[in-house]
Length: 282
Length: 127
Image (cartoon, rainbow over all chains, first blue to last red):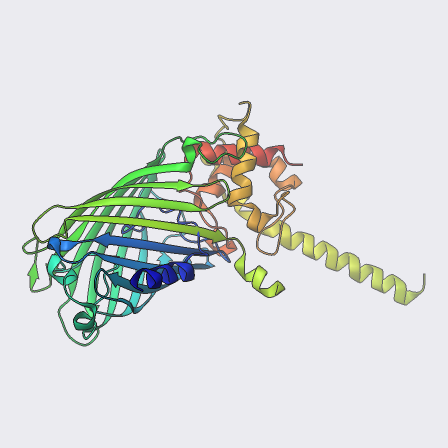
């Protein structure tokens, strides 16, 4: 039953597609092209501290409103082995490019509202004192906690000689209580070849991007720092097929006792160009 | 031709010219490239296969707005046009890197420089 529900999650999330961004946690200043819709699904699995393995699934719909504004809706769910599969909530995110021209460092602003419950284990960011203990427990017990939070990020990213380098400073605040929480994410990636080959090909080196990202919490405004925070390092590999579908995978390794140990992420994405025009034709 | 016919013809020509001018206006970012950037030469201009690679990249990254043959669309102006053909390669490269957010053109700085030059090579081959 559990796996059938997991399959259902994926079936709902499947018709999606083109995360050109090679990272899972770190954002860059790259915006979705106006009118394009990217459909994506991503999964994350871990068994923190030897507890039951969980499988978090997120369906994403990303739309380019303007060349400087991208909006995105996330639907989250989680399946826990020997437990249940539940829908855990939604997130609505907006990203704004702040400067009209390209510079060495390009700032972008990210604002997200999330309405999720405590069972959510999609691990789309790590902030405050998030750690292994937050990932352990039954869905029934954890989903009692409601999380209505606003997350903001300052994205600073650069494209230098084929390298993408990005730094994110993250802050998150529960709208009702709890202190401000802070986190960071840093990523570096590069395609395996800088020039493209003529002709359609699936396995050309320019279709692959390899990188690494580092992310973790920075405590809260009254307990800022690395104490009792979790941190991860995660190599990433992304492959874009000739048809435009992108597949990404990233094994993440916890760097301290607070971390969840080994975390495996996968994502599939696809971009529908000029989705608004397609809709109008229907 | 009666007066009404002549008037209709004039109106059609005026509207047609207006539309062409509006389309050309969307190519204005090409003239905004700073002199130094516009003067850059295309290192891939004479490289065999660069236009083919550029076409592949164009189809993936640009054809949604500018049309599969560069004929233009609702969102993007025609790039198979004299304006683009006569523009210096450096100016086209500059627009690909910076985009023109006001005109709705996103930046393609996430593409490696080599791939952007390959797209320029393909665009210059369009007539």
